[in-house]
Length: 106
Image 1 (cartoon, one colour):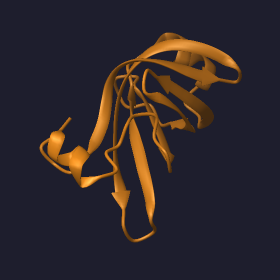
Image 2 (cartoon, helix red, strand yellow; image 1 turned 180 degrees about the horizontal axis):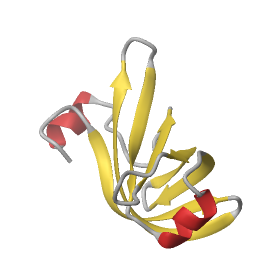
Image 3 (cartoon, one colour; image 1 turned 90 degrees about the vertical axis):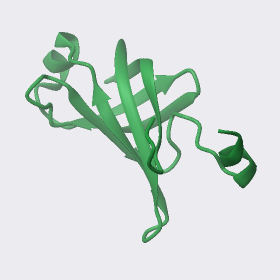
């Protein structure tokens, strides 16, 4: 995703809000926070009128599913272009290298 120490995913996803599934496009990134020991992941959901109608500009619990996995988090604060932010901590929905060998192969 970047030349910096970030992991991520860009592409199709399923967003689950209040038990309803929405097919969306996302861009996700993440990084490990050494101070508190948590992995933080975050990103934006491509502008979607259905999501805007359901969320109404407010925070909501959410689940995001991509081909690599799924994770729970929350959506919040749409930007001026209508893209909702999604974020979570701990295990992200995308694969994160866990060994030096994986990092060297990437």
